[in-house]
Image (cartoon, rainbow, N blue to C red; front, side, top):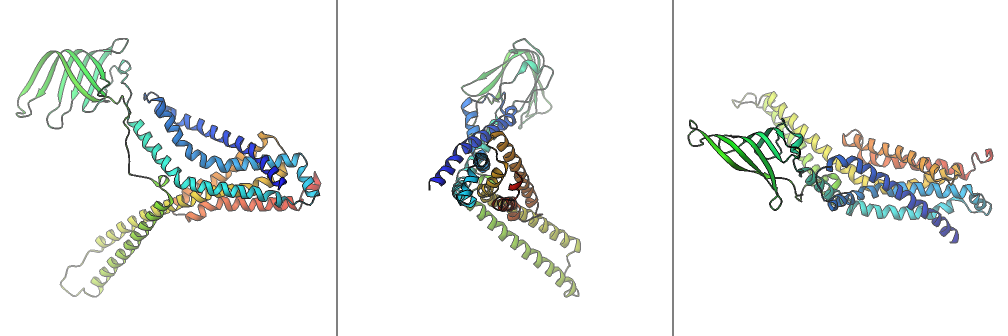
Length: 424
């Protein structure tokens, strides 16, 4: 019992270290990816933190298995480097007796991660996607000083063109404004100068024009052309996009559904596929019967091209639904296969750590990252192939773990049988 507690205590700090480093690297990568998308949007800092918090869910789902690999490799590497593995063997303690408690803890982590992937991850993914859509929809204050000579279409139903602006960008000169009205003809305003102001209370942009003309066609009589001069006029440009408008969405993609929802949709797709096959078979049977059996009757016969066209259309629809069902199956298996990697990584990390005989965090991290990258490439590659219907979804998602377990079994057998030990 003391030995088991000792081994598990050796895993604790490397696990926390690996988990923290992996989360840090993923956050940095996320910042670099999203910085250009939210930079200049004027998004409140609280919303930025909320967005990053929502994205930590998928980071945790990846970081836990990888941290298990790092901690197992480092812990058994330190035990081997300190000669404690040799001492255990001398006392008649097998390596499997030491790895057993680690496997149990990894299995418990995997079970918890399955629950996390089913209950927490879909909701966080959904909220993160909706929030990112809201941020994309938000427009910053228009930087007018840098848009001289460029047609500005940031405002609905308005196109604005000006020749120059003052240094602060507050006053615009030689303006041309096109106003599009769905119920009538477009209007054109020409002014010597103008100023854009923002009403923060209504989140509305206003354009004040000075010393200009308004050109328009009478909507009741298109033959009448109206020209109006003004000293000052105000145009309501509409939503300025200064404030973030939060929305909700009932739509969820495959990464935003729990297992039960995906299984229900898979059943719907399978039912629709069956109905499509029956419909296609009935259509072909009716066509064959009409041509071969009832050809002598005076009834009109469907053209072969029309029948083949309908069959081809039904086939394309069935193929689309089949691939949609496969994508959901891939996601269902992924919610189990990634947590199961915790156990697979223990089986391969322990013998590699004993073989490496190093307590160096750098060496352990390098080996872990390399192995995890290979595992991840197999997983992502299998997912793409399964989405296209090339291989079965369960095979695509479980093959990386199967290969990892096989490699771990070979390495464990070599360690147990002391293969290569005499060379050291």
